[in-house]
Length: 240
Image 1 (cartoon, rainbow, N blue to C red):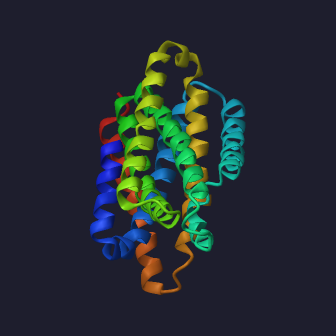
Image 2 (cartoon, rainbow, N blue to C red):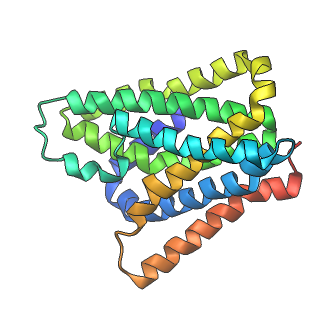
């Protein structure tokens, strides 16, 4: 996944205008993927052997928790344009973005590993959802780093190094595998809350920027497509 993220960044550098033109459709697909995995896969899996009275409060706590965490680390991915008035020679904000991404990617690694531990199919769907969420985020963060005073080479290198925390999070989770088994339903509920928060709070607001009816219809179509494609493997092959 770290290599994939940097391939995305490289493509964005080479053809930024085209990437920017289709970003809203990528975001729309990501919204559908995140919500589809949450409501059709993660939550049902968590509820399979545990009562709703235990699982649903954890989902709510997870949404609030990730809101607080995002506020703390200034993960304003949807509002990064507001920071363009900062002086380019000051790298403080760019460094803050890198630290935020480090923790964010580490959590992504944990989420992917937990999903694969529940089932290979669920792991694949969670990975797809995370990848499509990361595409617009990584492109936006690269732009912020450049504006903060990093060269393109530095921004690319630091983004790659930070993305390695995904592997660290996944590896740590696998090493603690046996400890996760009794906690798996609750962990999946936390993941579902994270996905719902990302879709509803971080990504959906960006889709309201367009007032074109045609554009809005296409966004809705990509959201539905995201739901269908990311949950289709589970419907066809189950969770074994």
